[in-house]
Amino acid sequence: MTLTQILKTLVTCILVISFVLLTISAYQRHRTISALAELSDTTSTIATRLTVDELAHVDSDGNLHMYTIDPAKLDNIPTFTLEIGGTTSAIRYP
Image: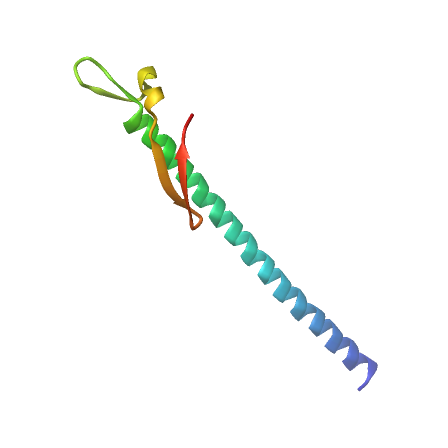
C-alpha cells in the first residue's frame, strides 16, 4: 500500500465516523425537541382547559365567559392526572 492509499483510507474512515456521530447527535436532538414540543402542548392544553372550562366566570344568567377567571373558583382547582413523556403525573395547582 502506498502512502496515498493509506491517506485515502484514513480520510474515508474519518468521514464515515463523523457521519455516524452526526447522525446520532441529530437523532438525540430531534428526540429532545419532540419531548419539549409535547411538554409545551400539554402545558397549553392545561392552561386552555383551566381558562375555558374549569375557572371560567359564569354570570347570574348562566352564561359562561371564557378566559375570564372567576376568583371564587380559584380555591377549587382540580388535580389533573396526565401522562407526560411516559410518566404519569398528578398536577395540583396552588
